[in-house]
Image 1 (cartoon, rainbow, N blue to C red):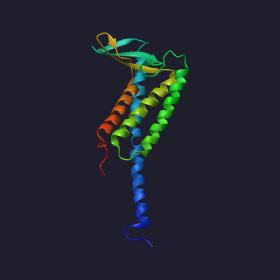
Image 2 (spheres, helix red, strand yellow):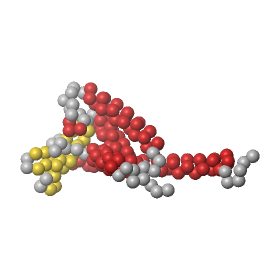
Image 3 (cartoon, rainbow, N blue to C red):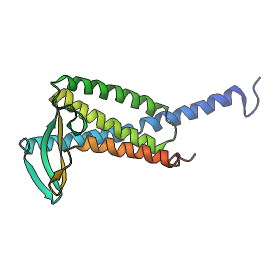
Image 4 (cartoon, rainbow, N blue to C red):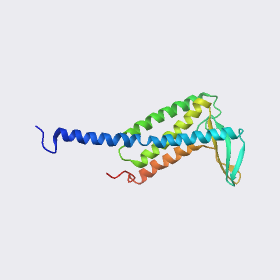
Length: 181
């Protein structure tokens, strides 16, 4: 016998509402991933079509557009390692992407974490595409000051950095960036 307003039927309705809210909320962050990947790939394609390797266009006194290829990781780490690093970093990106998808699936109402993970995923997949298809990552954003150049990077790297920043911000705020029920 079921109690009015409680019991098994109420639990099923509650679980159905919770599941319906959970699925779109978590999958909803993937639009941000898709947008960031699209912007990353479009900008890389535009730079590759317009620039020769290492050609520079001064945009601001401290910023150039340039074309550079990176066969390594961040800051060209292991770029001269002989080729094995391409497949190593491919495996790292695939593993990280799988972990991020699992993490996203387990989130409830953590907006900052969700957005951060979506951006990190976009960066990982954007650079993964370059590694698999081109054999190197296309970098083109060149910031410099007083003759010193920060290593060139791209929008995928920017997405990773912003995403990590959002996750750190969520930790600092103690989860206050969560959706109110």
